[in-house]
Image 1 (cartoon, rainbow, N blue to C red):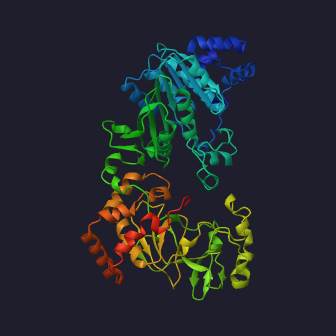
Image 2: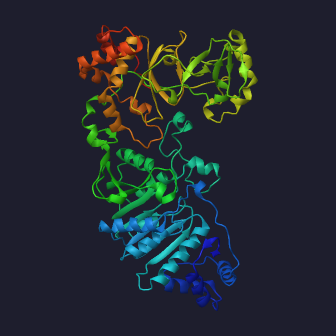
Image 3: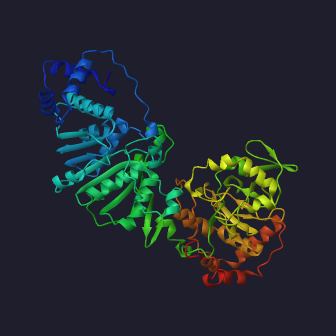
Length: 589
């Protein structure tokens, strides 16, 4: 049975039928509900009270429950909520005040009533009105089934979490033990914005990203992260604890930013859960736990929630470095510094149907299956992340049109120098105009990004940013032209093949692999980023590498790929990596 689109048990329905039938005023009904169950302002107005009575006495009200998964709304099941509160109780946590910032259907509130015996006040906040009702009905049902249980005062507020004034709670109960618990939405601000949701924080660049980063993705953040930070900011000076169920990326971001924020939290834990089992979704999520009102700490212990005996790993800050595995990092920290070569992303065009081509005989075929004839002058081979499987690549399966040699270059030259190519691009101008990213606004026709002198280096060493393979690839020219990479890849370029091969050997060494494993996160959207790769100090690695190993690897590559390379340029390569000489370290690279 449903009332106000919310599930209601027969036990609760029968209570209403028996106790509210003769009551005429919602104020009197509210007092009765408060006396019986501790819930303040059960009805907001008389209209709600009358509608509930009408529905209760009319059993024909089956309403299909809407699917709220698109809003990141994955309700915590009662069994998991109970296990979570029992886990907290096993830590001797016994809160007086409980706050659930997005209480949903109330399963964490019910679990708290069941497993915490000294609670005096509970606050639940929820924007979706049917869940407000279901939470209230579930509380009533709990107390009807457990009439001798402790009855705290309970306020379930219909509100946007970003508008609710949590400071009033902190001021009123500053001396009490508090627990913030819950499961905030697993969705980003841009996703909610596309769904026209009002459950959003004010539109601010709350991490202070620069203009380009904000435009190209870093400005997008997880709503749960914003909610978690709001809870930490508001309650960090109170005695108590926070436990929120969030995506793993949120926990990583909070620990990363802790070095800057210096919030008064400690004993930070990541309790890993099985999201497929609990919510039937393929999302990496965990319980974020921390102790409030503490000397700030900057690392996080990881546990398996279902076998919570010993931490199996610890990540966070060690000195001024952020790492994914503190113990493993200590063995490779000597190469954690600054890369002597600037790592770059490949080119970005956001128009693959037109810009990415197959070659069939003397024709090119685009993503629309159109056969076109183009001049070869600005057509280059291109590799994607999925192509970077081999140690050395000499040929590409795809081609792309490179319209510029540097970002912002005027593209009028294409019309005179490559008329067939210009005609082709012009015929598909609507595809370019439809690109959504604001980075193309007010730019020349057919503009691309991620292009520069480095793109035209003949020899490149590259790695996929998406795949979790700790393996670097050497890319050789194709038809006497440099090969391009797309923006899912990262690269460094060289004029000499010897330098590229030396770098390849260093980057594919056991030391580099172990270092990268200690500073990257397996559940990250991109395992490798420019920030991570720029930490590999190739000069320090080159100074420490065993010369016998170096010669052995060079010999192996010579035999496998018909190279004829020696170590004659090794000393020059070493000198080239000294920052004052190599000229590649840029202030704003």
